[in-house]
Image (cartoon, rainbow over all chains, first blue to last red; front, top):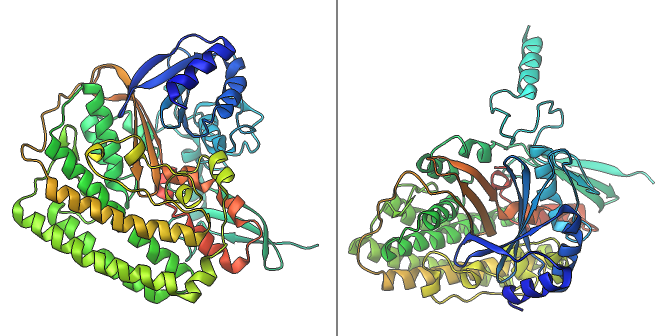
Length: 160
Length: 360
């Protein structure tokens, strides 16, 4: 089934807003704006229609945090979710797409978005003893990591 | 029942890059395993937001030492799309040529790693000897063996004259003979089959649910290849065959990759013969208009994904990079279930991991 038809069916079935587009290669990427509460039902429907491939999850920081779920299945589709500033939680889609685990863990540790029901919420890229904030946030600067300070103290202690 | 937990990594002779596995054993059989990433995390996504678009080309090339060219290709084409630049066809063809040479070099390197891991050192030496041919070709045309710095925003930096094209063609002919010999060897070799057949199996359902990409997916019967399904650069003008197999084990992955080498060499020859005339690049402005773009490309290991957001300045506001290894890694605990401890090395090598890519 073509992505355009899938989109049409999806919008009819769940009563969603009509899609917009962003640039892509070789064709434009369809963007569908949804609410965090609709995420699981939309992803489940996409699975029914045969869209299995989630490329990744991107997190953006504007006034609000935005999550982009990039799907690809012989056509492009991005789900866009804006999060409320005081509620940085979203359901984990791992039960539906097990391959989303690493993407969710990365967004969780880098931006502090909580994926509810994530089977293994351990850090993916950051050290186990990381005490800094969420490194990818805009107010976080690359040279102010608390873990870095920790380590240098340890090293000095060891040498003296 | 007592279980033994064997740590492999972060530093281990089996691994070429740092990653840590904890493998829990019942006798010689693997019961459970887990892995830990992050030992080469350099924060490249964050760094990219503090550098200009042009500086980022060189930063991004250093994500990976094997598939460096595909990263800059994906990044440059994202910016070119945002700018609405019309890249000259000759530039696109040369870019594609390097992509295919890189695929050959990456797959030959991988064959060596797998052969070394399963104790077939002769194949390791032969495949790395033959890899020198393609490395020399790339050095001759770009000046670098693995970091070519060929891509610039708006085209490529290098041009190919008639002498170089002849050199490439004869190099590819040499290589084809060597690769066919290698394929014949590993297809017939009983010890190679004994160490790879039926090992690290993934079914089509597993592959779909874990969003697996590249040769690992194609070895389990999933017929996807972005060069054919979402053509970028010059691929829409070239003939591409996609080898697919259904066994889903390390043996099938080896065969897929070996056939891809031959396919890549055919593509490279097509490019050499049909190389259009004209300039190789066009001038690109330093500032990029505001907008969002998604860019995908087929690396030697599968789909590379870039998301770029511009706010109209000289620096990207957000650059998201997802490499194929990160996706394929997630299947390792699944593949390692119930294999013998001695086969763990074959399974780990079979996926073709690039940890620097996965960590960024």
